[in-house]
Image (cartoon, rainbow, N blue to C red; front, side):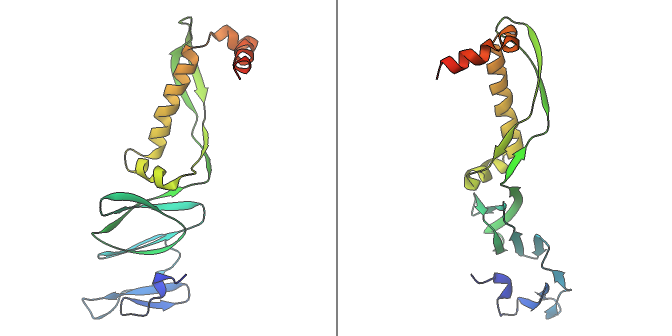
Length: 169
């Protein structure tokens, strides 16, 4: 796979771990830039480096897309960089919600959610709409409230709720 940074034209000058971009105003080159930078913007050009275990979320002609590991040369306005998204296993910060159980007993429930993104293209769609974390937070709050509302707190403490769940399998 050819690295777009290594293109042999007047856009780039490459030297081992750094490169520089053509500066049209001076008909020369801009200062050296480290290739370790994840996002490099230079006029209408953006160079995005995506490591293993993450994707870059870009808007390509109005649609969000997830770019897998590699280095990409994006040209505005067609393709615009938005964010990097880690796709490994993650755990949310602890959350606490107030709700009631099936007998209307008030509860404060603390929980965390561990998840893994298995469909980066779909996750990219949520990334720009308040963020994936916000979407997961709202979904988990709703699920936790529904679970608590359907269960009596004394059943949870005695283990009866778990045995009832096991009977339904």
